[in-house]
Amino acid sequence: MTAPLFTPITLGKLSLKNRIVMAPMTRSRAIGNVPNEIMEKYYRLRADAGLIITEGASPSANGLGYARIPGLFNGEQVKGWRRVTDGVHQAGGKIFVQLMHTGRVSHPANMQAGSRVIAPSAISAPGEVWTDSSGQQPHPLPAAMSEADIAQAIAEYANSARLAIEAGFDGVELHAANGYLIDQFLNTASNRRTDQWGGSIENRIRFAVEVAKASAAAIGAEKIGMRISPYGVFNGMSSDTDMDAMYERLIAELNAIGLVYIHIVDHSSMGAPEVSPLLKAKIRAEFKGKYILSGGYDVARANADLEAGRGDLVAFGRPYISNPDLLQKLTKGQPLTAPDFDTFYTPGEKGYTDY
Image (tube, rainbow, N blue to C red; front, side, top):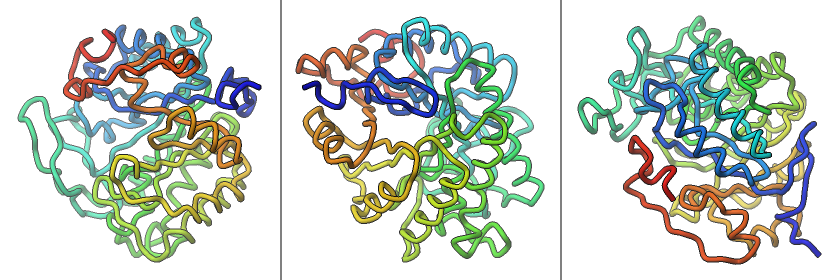
């Protein structure tokens, strides 16, 4: 019997050749925020995955918070991404783009002229961010978003989803995890609003729900997934007593919209707090779309969790950085090449396309 990890699965209207997902990982190779030739090679070499989810691409000039991350909001970026999707499709792969607006996790030195660091509330993210011009810099104080800013951001996600289809992507993952803009609305550490966008559970999930609705109206819910990180602490997030109830309510709303998958971040294997097993089981039971597992998986654990029905697909992150032939190695039980941590976010081919 074939191990479930290596069996095909349907995702919306897509047929995937296996249940391995290449997880989204920031790699900072997009000079001028435009996807390029080495990015095409990087993704094409990994097209054996059932599904590739790209690194976060910003739907807005305001969301380009890190050095050298790609955008997906103008024609030049669409052209760059089209080169990537063509390469992956020619190699037999399927690819979603992750839309990531960094919100307050940003710095003007990493952004284009005329853009703004914005967030639900005027609360700085803790810690520092790398800038190519001045090295590590503290996160600046973001501007609290006005109603007009919020409406614009929602429209930008929908527009970026449309551009994703124009660029040849099979679908879009909305990044609502890890302390970026959508998560900043969900989390009380970054959202202190007293209007319809903050306070109650209903108000805090509103931005995530409206982004999902607008994106689904633009390209169809069967082409949209969402990544969430309950109990995450990255970028200054913290959990509160309403955490489980909030995510249960969010899942109910996403079911009503008809999203194709939910992708849970669980970095407990890397030392982060454990995601409540009860909450994960509840989301698994209640969500009507596919469920992507993640977090330090190997083949044995992936197959065990798939066989137990804990999820439908399994995301692999860091192993894909240094093993473009990961599927082959996992299938044959071959040892994996260790990644070079020093080159995770550096420009150029070293530690990127030279493994």
